Amino acid sequence: MSDLLGQLYRLQTRIRFVQEREKRRDTVPPELMEVDREYQEKVRAVEGLKARLTQAELEKRKAEGELADHKEKLRKYQTQLRNVSSSREYSAALNEIDGVEKLIRSTEDRFLELEEEIETARADLDAREKNLPEETQQHEERLKDWRADQRTINEELVSAQEEIRRLEAEIPPRDRSEFHRLIDKKHGLAVVLVSHRSCSACHVAIRPAAMQQLKQGRDIIYCDSCKRILYYDPATS
Image (tube, rainbow, N blue to C red):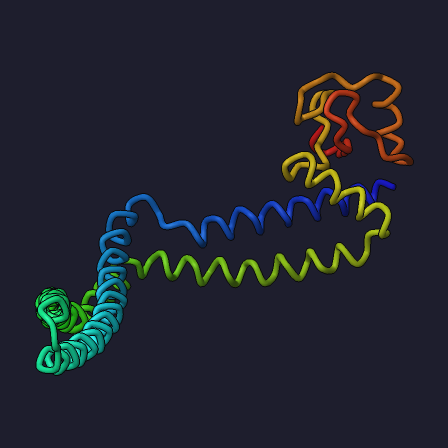
């Protein structure tokens, strides 16, 4: 049983190591956060300009189509105007023509606004894309020490994850399942060392009888208070 407890404790240690190292690998150091934020803003600005350009070009094509439709309607109403036979029909045709002419003017204005927006956005995008490779290089240069640290961490993780797989395979399924249940329930701390006859997690004293069982190492003993698995190591307890 003491061997099993040692394996569970080691498995937990390796799992927590992986979690801590992954967090360090994936978290931008505080001293680099502003550097990274500025660079990411530049990247997002380029992506935003591209998206807006695509949208503006779609809107321009739509306005172009609407303008053609309005002009076709205007020709139709102008033809009808020449063929009306009463003043009421004439007045109705004029109203239709006036309404379509207003639509044509507003659509033309929108079309011109979109053309101007597209021209400005393209110029801005060209300038930003021209500068981005150099800015990316500068960004990576500033982050090179962290990138090196990330590579070192990835190497450490390979070894740790291999050990985790080995330990998982060696631990009986029932004990492994109970261990993971506690890991999930106890925020990653399922097995805790006994320190000065107390649980090192909740610091509640261990009953003498339970302490004696722990020293014998024949049974899994849980803390009466926090319900975690207790691990007695004579070298550290």
